[in-house]
Image (cartoon, rainbow, N blue to C red; front, side, top):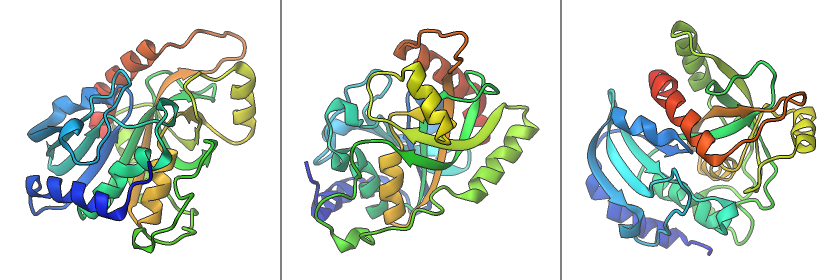
Length: 267
């Protein structure tokens, strides 16, 4: 489905009365990140099914609820549940929440995900602050008819992820003795997990972690001039000498534990 600017306006107009006249941080929660919701003082929670033009999520670990509240001293709008290409959604559907976020007047966007690590130094549960990405998904969300109200047709992608956020998170992680990395995230189509040969190839290509989300949302947010941050929880680490099975249930378990103990302390 190709969403229009007017449809995004209608969805934003529905949500707008729930927001206070404050600067908000928008957060898209990845797999397992719902554990961070316990840190949020909720004001409103709206199921996606009640939002105009919104589809529903179908993946375990993604609630499909828009939460509005306060996290520490921050006013936050939290998309608890994202849409994925492997579910059969179009890139326009996947990025629709980001479009709506911008039309709500929110400039700051934090994208989170669970990812497979490609470095021997990584450990399950450690964090990776995304400094760049590789788009290995089969489509670009900007493909198709262009509406100049969203931003430029050919947005520059040199500085997608905010360096000040990376510096701040790294400083806090050091102070709190939280294991972290700064690296490149590679976005895949999914839903099958990566083969050993693919893991090795992606590492040689310059990636430090791989996952099935984040990149389309970052591209669209960049087009609209938003400030973007990205945090991955490393859910599993590729070891060519000791291959172990990875399950979605295991990814959720590691993600939730790391989110409670680590991500909530850094953001």
